[in-house]
Each structure stands twice: as structure tokens, then as C-alpha cells.
Length: 625
Image (cartoon, rainbow, N blue to C red; front, side, top):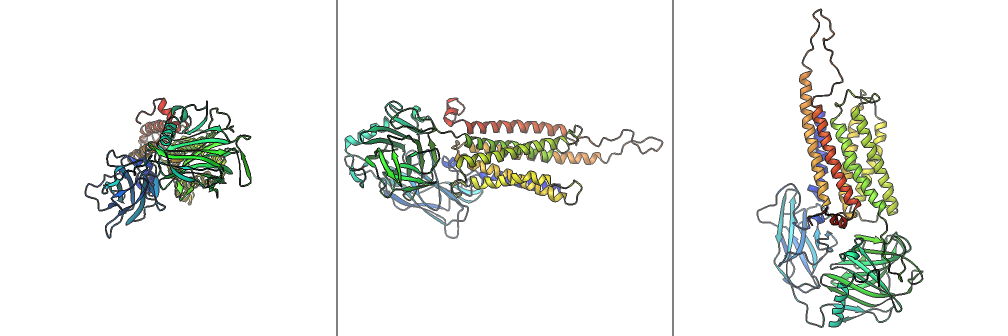
């Protein structure tokens, strides 16, 4: 039975390790953008790839699309893939992909500029569309990774070169959209050279006079002071309304700002800078609950619209009327104060999909005042993340290790008639249960119920709630346990072991997926991988130690104690039945070492969760980027 238990435990722990290392059955993570190599515990194939990457044309215009086909030879298939378009000159990832069947990646702060698989089903052919950047010309090579099976994969499979031609000569390389009246459809006209140069200056000077002559709000927090925002919006009063500016990185998707009566998404007025089919436009929309809906007149209340893609940046500027009425709600920008929202995300067709990043002001803002905008607190989200890391990485791991290997340690120092290992196990698992339930309550309050994120995009919530459910029932199972000598006790032992380990494996898996939702740096994934590898290694060492201990104990039982010469059955030196099993000193040293490393890794993860990446860089704690 013990041998089977050890094998089952090893399998589950290795499954935990493989969730992120080996499987990636839902596609590669953003961390794979750089070298495109899976972390599957094996080396890439050196023989030529049987799979091909074929573009549909040898030449494409800027802002135009071309089909890209990933294909296996007849009778063969692949389970996973990752494809990018890279400049032939400097290998920079360029362009934007379009697909509804597969999963996007955002490499190098881009948007949808790589595609990977959504599942591990066999594929013989994959067809996706790629759109050339509007501000790029030169040769592009499509580079792919193909995974046949977990340990059989090819990296760096390339296509023939595709030439992105230069834009036709004209007054300026970008187009602008202008509306003459506030409630009429836009007309399209080319930018003059002067207009184009003015927009270039506006982008360069976007951070100038923030909180002095205009209001500014950016992502990440405080970036407007450092001039390094992924997305920034500005506002200032003009005749007849308020002028807004939105600047983000080039790529398909949207950058949006919104006005709201509270900090929650729902019943908000949205103004979005949208990049669709290589063209940039500005649209008006309304958040209805957690869903976004474009207005029938998509530029209602807007005028003086200018858009451009310049030097890898998307720029939109427009004037919104002071007073508009949308869906029976009056938005008076001069009279009322609003929470300001800022978001970025992908498009679903022409509709704004659920945001990939979002910030909201902590208080209401008057658009006639240019004070520094404070970001709404994410305290509950941060506490949720910190509690879950503390519960599953730290407390549960320590509790499981102690219950598995320390039942024959500290036998001579009981407390209240109970072995020390049981006190420690109960403490750590009680801590796990308390932190998990508290974390669940915090995130439900913060989100306002169940998340709107599609589980196919990120299954964090589904995996997490299953883990919480298993964790919740575990102590009640323990209260119903039968006596140690009862015939059904082995059944309880196996169920208690299975539920506990399953909850931990799912909990750590949920943490992996949760890192993306809190905007943790990509390299945080590798810290978790290091922890899991360390956790499995300690299990292996302690399992070997336990085998050695059992062997020594068995040999010791074959030694008969000396008796008195008068034939008394009482041993000369009575055996103490409460002695620790052999190797107690080794086990204690291993536990101290494990807890030290565990606490250090937990502290690092908590630091990443509670402190923004920019601050960590300022403190010199991130020196490799």
C-alpha cells in the first residue's frame, strides 16, 4: 500500500509540474514570444521539419492582409503551434493576426501579433490571416514552432520571404477621418504634410503640460510622469466641448476611455480609438452591464476627429460635445463629475471585446480641472492574489509535506496527548482553508459576482472555484473520519489524500493562469516553475529517506533484547515504543531547508503581487530587463 501511495503521489506532483511545463494544451504563454521554444523537458528536433509555413502571396501592401497556412504532410498532424511574423532585417515581431479559431499572444507590448493553439487536438492544416503594419516596408518571414507530441517539436520553421511594399506616394503616409458636424457620418480625406507633421509633434509632446494645461491618465499607473505609458489619454476644454487624445502602441485592437458614475464597469459612456483592417477610427459606445455596445450612430457627439499611425503608435484626437443623451442618460461633461476609465483590448469583428488591461480613477474628476488623477484601489484583487499564493504555495505545501513524511518524528514530545506532526499539519491546513475562503469572498466582492472572462481565454476562475470547493470540504471530511483501527479507515485515508492533493494542484494551476489577469511580469511564471520543481525534488528526497528509514527500522526489529538470567521476560533495558524512526535528524534538517526556500519564494511572489513592476525596476530588484 505504501508503495502504491508513493507512486500515486509522485504522479500527481509531476502532473502539477506538467500543467505549465509540459502541457500548454491551451496554447503557448506570452513568455514563449522570445525564443518560441516549448519547455517540454526535451530538446528541439534537429532534423528538418515535416511541417510547412506557406504565405498566400509573395507581396502585400501596408495595412493589407495575406493568408498564412500551417500544414502537415498527408497522413501526419501536429497538436500545437506558435507562429509570428518577423522582420527579415532585425527579427522584430511585426504585424497583426486575425483568427477566430485560435489564441492570440501579445509579444513585445504588441497586440495580437502571434497566434498559438487553443487545444491539443490533432491538426493537419491551420489557416490564419496576417495584416501588414501600415507604417512598415521591407521583407517579412513567418516563423513557427510545431509540436507533434510533448517531446517531439520543431522550432524556427520559416516561410519564404514576403515583401511589404512601400505605400504609394502622396501628401502623407497616413489617412485622417474628419467629421464636419457632430452627428453626421465621417468623411475621409488625406492628411496634408503640415497636418501629418503636427500629429507627429502631438504624439511626441503627449506628456507635456500634464496636470497643468491638460488632464492625463495612463497605464501603467504613474506612467504619464515618466513618459512610458502603454496607453495614455488626455483631455482639455475647448469651444463647444472637450478635446480628448488617445495614444497606444500600433496593432489591431482598441484603446478606449470612458466616463462612469462609479468604479465598476456598467452603464458607462465609452470613446474608443479602434484599429480595424489597418485603418484607425473613433467610435462611441456604451457599456451595458459587462458588455459593450456600439451606438447606432458610431460617432454621435464627436467632431474634429483626427487619426493616424505614426512611428509604431496609434493616435486619435477628437472633440466631444459638452452635453449628449445616450440611452435616456444625459452626459453633461461640464456640469457633472465622473470616474475616468481607461482600457485596451482586442476586437471581436468590429466590436470591442473584454479588456486585457484597465484602470479607473479612484474618485470623480471634473474635466475642467487638471489635477493628477489617482487610480482606484485594487486592494481586494491584490489581497485575493496574495492570500491564494500564501495558501497554496506556502501553507498547503508545508502541511502536505509534514503529513506525508513526519508521522514518526517528534514522538517523544506530544502536546495535549497529540503528536507534534498532527498539530503542525492541522495548523497549516487550517491556515490554507481560512486564506482560501477569505480570498474567494474578496474577489467576489471586487468583481461583483462571477467574472465575464471567457474560460477559453483564461480558465483561472473555473479551475480556482473547483480548488476552493475541494478545499472547503476537506476539514469536514476530517471531522467525519473513523478511528485508526476501523476497517474503513483506509478508504478515508485515500479520499483525504486525493482531495487534498487535487485541491493543491488545481490551486497552483489557477495561480499560473491568474498571473496574466493581474498583469504580473512574464518571468513570474518561471518563479512558480522553480517552486514546483523544488517541491517535487524535496518529495523525492524525503521518499528515498523514508525508504531508508523503514529498512533500518525493520532490521532493528530483528534484534532481541537481553533478558535476566533468571528467565524473566522483562527486558534488561525496556524498549521505548515512542522513539522516532531512524533518520529523524535528516528529516528535521530537510523540513527546515524546505520551509526556508518555500518562505523565500512565497515572499518574492508576494512582492511581485503587491508592488508594481516599475517600482521594482526603480529599486534595482529587476536588473535583467
